Amino acid sequence: DHTHADTLRTPIVAVLGHVDHGKTSLLDTIRGSAVSEGEAGAITQHIGATDIPLDTISGMAGELIDPSDFDLPGLLFIDTPGHHSFSTLRARGGALADIAVLVVDVNDGFQPQTEEAIDILRRTGTPFVVAANKVDTTPGWNPQDGEPIQKSMDAQSERAKSMLDENLYEIIGQLSDAGFSADLYWRVQDFQKNIGVVPLSALTAEGVPDLLTVLMGLSQRFMKEEMAIDVTGPGEGTVLEVKDERGFGATVDTVVYDGVIRNGDTVVVGGQNEPIVTEIRALLRPRPLAEIRTEKQFEKVGEIGAAAGVKIAAPDLDDAMAGAPVRVVRDRTVDQVVEEVKAELAEIEVETSENGVVVKADTLGSLEAMANALREAEVPILRAEVGDIAPRDIAVAETANQDEHKAILGFNVDLLKNAESDLENADVKLFKNEVIYQLVEDYERYVEEKQR
Ligand code: GTP
Ligand code: MG
Image 1 (tube, rainbow, N blue to C red):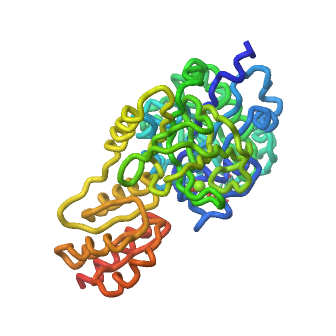
Image 2: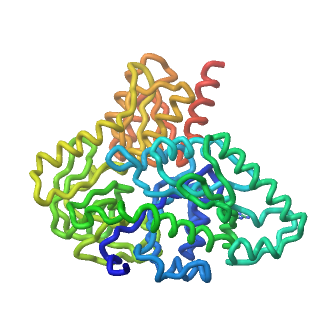
Image 3: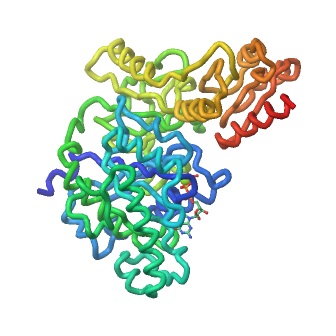
């Protein structure tokens, strides 16, 4: 029944896995762009979103997909940073994603963030497939650009094939150790019982047709009912990032995961102090295949339905927080929706103690990731907030009992102009870095030197 095409919502596909295993490269290959190359230290720092329409998917999948078999509009891919913060990609306490692709480097196998991702997938009951990436690095590999993996395998020497097989079975074994029965995807009959492993290369695109085919099949078969819910209800979403946009002021890049958002709607957005109640002035949609993180040409639309990435322009969004909920009010009362947003924010609080350092980060997700990294390093936190470093933060850091705690750790934030002289005059050390683990390491090194 193909008449449903415009009432089914686009499935949300999260791409996760260990740092450098190739998540962004895989998405680059699917969308035909090169976002990965432009990233600081080639590490993804923010969660992004890209809408891939069905015709692109079927174009890439070639003979493996017959587009008339599908009535889903496409897939919305969410790219995540490999370090720690996927756990904050949440919606109403559950997972934002409908399905996931766990990217594993065939040579490296399971690594710490692979394990972390598996834990989250298990906890949230999110169906997933494994992309066994970088098959092209197998010694003696004979690349077959863009071909389905079977065709590519047929072109390999016995030696290359058996080396790859060895790595693939290692991964299948690791999945089994993690409690998941898994096999190469073409041997899987029931994708609800067994995890399919898709060997591929983000670099040469071989095996990518297979991955897209498996993802479309999974969404279509198992999630059609979930995809058909509430497509016209009041929109609900999650803020990916707050950004200043010329001519609009502060805007929020949002993933809408339920219902519909219309221009002119009153919305409630999680803010640094209180939830923000505002009216939408413009809904700006990235072009299909464009990553919302890097898009420059947006199209103004009257409404947008789930699932989609959209930039929302509205007054008073300066204090909005990345990772916070966005809710359309529509036929409810503003107070009711404000309470909902408050309840959701209360779930994401960072544990603080009486002694410790001050932490500032650009998003709720990165703040939570910082808090996790500091807890692992046994560094206590006095105060943790989203936002740039202000005079108040320096005053708070100065009150620390121990010298080593008179410190501010800033992740992806700036020192405000009016705080510069305060910092010079205070006995407070500022650490800034765009990579979480490096920031924590910098601080640990400082403490070690101090104790010497
Ligand atoms: P984070 O965002 O930091 O977690 O990393 P990521 O998983 O997005 O990895 P990314 O796509 O940035 O790739 C990391 C490195 O691996 C880059 O140098 C890529 O060029 C390389 N790479 C990714 N996929 C492949 C592949 O299939 N084959 C080869 N040879 N290299 C790859
Ligand atoms: Mg990346």
